[in-house]
Length: 521
Image (tube, rainbow, N blue to C red; front, side, top):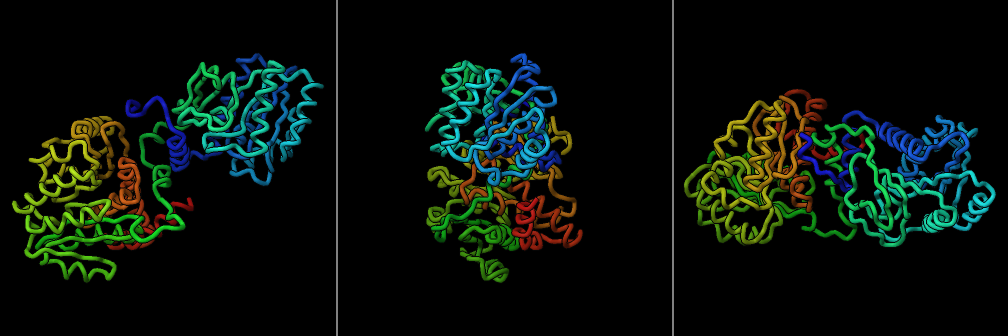
């Protein structure tokens, strides 16, 4: 399954992997420990350090600095003297992992480790004096800033970067950066203000997008493992979800946080479109309009006063509703099409018109339930479009005539779904005991959920979550991943807090509780 990962990674993707590893039971402190150990082992060997050597380690107050504290600890275990320069206030060390390692070297390991604190850029002079007096420093480690660098660099970090670059030239002391050179954007390789000029960068897990050797800022580049498991990339986890839970801006107004149009409902199905719409409302989207056939309009309105329901005469939606739908499509930024739609020939004709209009207007949408069966003869209309298809195994068979291997045959089932997504050029979310998500470039698998979710309505909740994540401007593949993960987690939450006999409405009512629980993990 490694073929679904690129050789390079963005800082955002790296954060997802860190959080997914934690979700899998691997504490971030363990990752920091592995990072510091692998870095220390590499420089010990590469620079032939011994008991006469001294290493100067500059650390910031973030996790990059935390890695630096661990490097000092492991060099200590090898008998190497270090001086750790904390650039900033110890009270502002940002994570518990970094604070823990700072406290260890600050309070307990003071035989081979010296500690200095630079709270102000004017303090840098005393480090220059120290270097003039002590000629045993053989290496400088840059642990000032990590992958979260944005914009202009603040003091005293800015002055320290200049200082490191100067002493690198003046004293010919090699500089090795932890993960990225401080100041360089790891995604683009750009330096917007200033950056460390590193003789060597030891980066973790995979090469960051913007890192390239033999440049002004990076002479040599090495990659070291820090114990992030393959499952952190393959399985959807809490790390995938967190960045997609967007926060409203202070000056937000109604409509900016999602305008969703749900098209579905027919003589035989009123619950399905209501479930999808109520999911979007309870998720927190601003405005949701549910467009259904008139026969079920009043029933759907009775579900909740929060529902805005528009209807068209008849038992099923037909071409007669297209003109009204066009204005609603123009209004919306996301559509969910299919819950309870029915399989009438006139409904299929309407669906074709809608998809043609969406293709022209470049709208993002979710195709679910009956809509998946109706498009079998019209796959050209969805190819290369911003759409999430949400079939279960049976619906996929109707849609493509493809039989899938068992849900837990990850290699073969994943390969078939990946190949199909690539062929159709769409985002596929294939529901099952394990959900498979692919856009034909990437593949991820979701294992949240429980057997008690195999009841009516849970698929409609999933469609609503897909639409919700799309409506708040998430990447379409990431929206599908987050929807699958959250849907399954809500089911687990309901089983734990309500009992094994819960309903789709119970899931909808507990969306917020489940999200709050996940944020606290």
